[in-house]
Length: 241
Image (cartoon, rainbow, N blue to C red):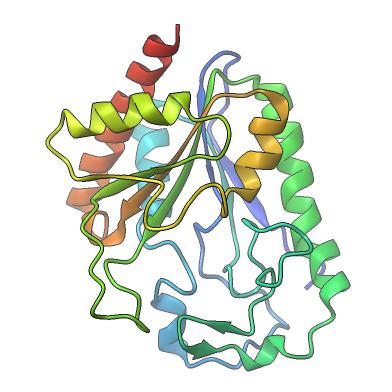
């Protein structure tokens, strides 16, 4: 377990460019960890941001956007939470029990995965000196525990204190005829851990983009959204000056 690298990178950043970060890009569970869930659970949104890894790969291959991607499931450890967050190593998620996490050695898992991921991301971003960071996630059209509550937004922008880039991006996505969420379906003022740490704390501009996962569940959608995202990101950079 301790020898598993919790991240991988694609492409080489150029100073002053655009880079991408994806904390929930994988549903992999390292050998030696038994979460105690049915196999099908690992293909659901509770385990992985569906479509994000493929969109990131398309952004790198087609548009030259380098990426730093998580290589393990958020059910192992949620890299997009603070170390002391109660959901860092979840015991339940959207109605699914994660019994293997009930008695886990929290300190060991943080040392094995969480800190190496964020230490590497800190070094990668310092070397990259990016003009803009894209933090890419996806959200499910409906929570399994609240199927009656549809989420109409095709894409959403999350932000905490540093909101100006998000405002530009929301306008640009709306100009494409999309239904755009403003800090929906959850607020970046509550859930913005990675960008709080690696962007806002360093004065770096970022776009925390959430795509509804039915938009990027197949190859056609992934190609389309990679093109949309890079177009909006580049126009946001231009608008920021």
